[in-house]
Length: 187
Image (cartoon, rainbow, N blue to C red; front, side, top):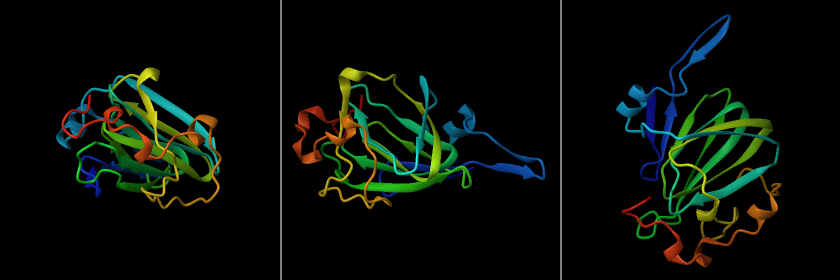
């Protein structure tokens, strides 16, 4: 397994070992021992899956308090996955990084609490799965608009299909900093 740091502290790209032959392939999408050795959390409390078609964009989502760390991967299809640092006081506050995740490259990305997360489907469709370090809490849910010009995410699509909720999110600068997670404590 190969683990690479991104330009955002704590956001990691994981490339699991894949064992394949003429019958297909095998890989571990999670191993407590192996992932702990790589510095990832050992406790996950919820697994989620979503299916979306080409052009769908989901995000940018986070929770605070009760922030969620997410270990994400694509089971089928392809997405462009993005993390944005929204931790007040962070030297990378408002910065983003993105990675292409697909059923072909089998990469995963770990996004720690304190980061907004989103993805857009770049293939015909995508079956997307993620493990969460905290349960979903509707009352602590926050969002940042996908095309916030101050963040400047270079999405690979121009006119995504959004949910009404995602389309109504504010810019990061419009969110009261007291509602955002601080750099030190990301509960």
